[in-house]
Length: 322
Image (cartoon, rainbow, N blue to C red):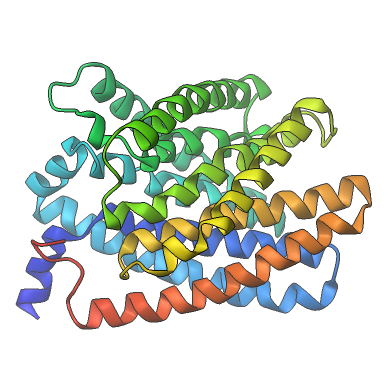
């Protein structure tokens, strides 16, 4: 028992990528329930599991902060690991979205405030280190760099209900502009530099998230009005999803790691975006796209839960080699 408590020193913030995936799955079920009431029963189960796991992970990371502050600081200063820390703030924001859609506006507001404050703080921490660094090399750049950016794009989805709209436009502007900049950097790194480490290859799926989340967020900022820019965001997200499917053979050869959870949230965002497209356009093709992605997401979430539980039991995670 004492050994397991000591291992919490190596507890990675990337664990919260699991909460992002599960929250995204819950929100996708909420959107689907607006079309098929029969799917509503999955919402409580999915969200209940998400909240339980979030409470457990937050308790463990809180313990790490209290007992192993040096390890937390090291994580915040690590050129790769620092980009996974905002998964905590994004998890809060996604839970805020889920609870708002279920009618818990007050709880949603407190979650949103906590998530937004933490998100902007971590964003500026990461940006400061990107600009004033003395340790980065091109090989340190990877699609996880999108995580601090995507969090800002998530903020307006329910932020428009909890704060003046200018606040949401601020976050959206930061996220969408830096998405374009970081995307250019990462495409250059992936094409012209050494291949990504095996454990980081699943983070390629994060390329789907900014345009998919951007589409959902932009609709929220524009009263669900579908215009040309919204269409560009949706179809670019769909194009990146197809690119990842074309590369499926590459992903299937990988050994399990926590980074596998990077598959989940981008797919959830694309499923939700497709449901919204179906609702706005009344074209069933988008509904079928959303359902197909949603079913695949449900399958891999169940698979990853089993593999993560096994890895935790075998102590393959939270050790000094992780």
